[in-house]
Length: 485
Figure 1 (cartoon, rainbow, N blue to C red):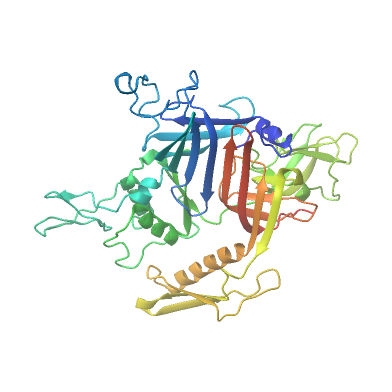
Figure 2: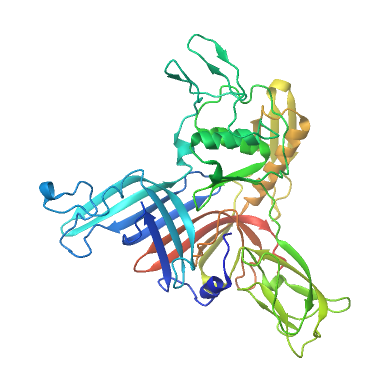
């Protein structure tokens, strides 16, 4: 989750079903920030690169309503009797764009970035005196999606559309160039450095590549030939490395590309606090995540204390304090345990909620092989958590030539099983728009005292309309128990 201040949280918490109430939408198109945007829509999905957005602009001169071609390219006095304006060369394919959204009064303090990318398509529509422009954009990773793999070496005017690690280029005469070439050195050059190298060759600068180095799974080598004559696009090569590392990659709202350890989120906190006076004491991860009130347990050696009697909790600041006259004495030390997540949705913040389970994408048996080395491992799914189970006759079989030992195949199957079971339980929300959320953030819904589990966001759509405000839909899968009561 992007950091949310207490002030921002209080604004959201004070509004039920926030729509047109106090939204801020801030778009920078080619350095221009005063272009009137009438509508905006953006979607993000787990595992998808080059995320997209669309904007609609009223194509009308703000000082002359009859001038309905105001933003059009090619305006000039001699051709159209209309003067060119400061937006010429701005709203064109390839133009840079960034978007911020939020609630409050300040475009700088109350907003967070939600999209950075460039324009793909500009469509102008005119009808009578009305005209509008629709802009289709994609995120910065489009250069990884669109650009083909090629070796940097150009010999005799030829470009080789493949790459090897270590990298070998071939001269037109057939003479082999044997230089080992990576843009960034690393202790594990066959994996992490390949990912970094692919990002840089696709066009990312080193400062826009962010990665973890403490892997839960970090292979020291791969099967010989796994990175020989790599073809396709840079994103395919990068994703291959990501899969081998047991990691995930995504495009950030600010335009950077990230490589992160998979399944490393922690959502349980345990603090020891001296409850001095009635001062507020912040719990773990305040700002990026907040505790679920229903899950908080405060104890000392002999007693469990009662919320709103002995102590109180402030969600906006993620803090607790003792209540004068309650069971906690001034200065008493207590142990606090709780579950936290990126955001807890209350009933007034959800328009509609849909839960569903389905066997369509579920298998009773997962099988991973390395056919070349005649290795084969399998894992039975078993019970799915709601009492149902799948026949082992419905099997998913995958050949993984990059995995060269039974231990590697077993680890792959275990990870695959966790993801499949998570995706069995699904939750769809039509809810208040919270632009701070990201794909893979953990959320909780507390509805009518029944839905209190943790769910992981796998995709969302957020929209803005100048007349009706912001709204959001979220797709998520089961992550775990919230610990709420």
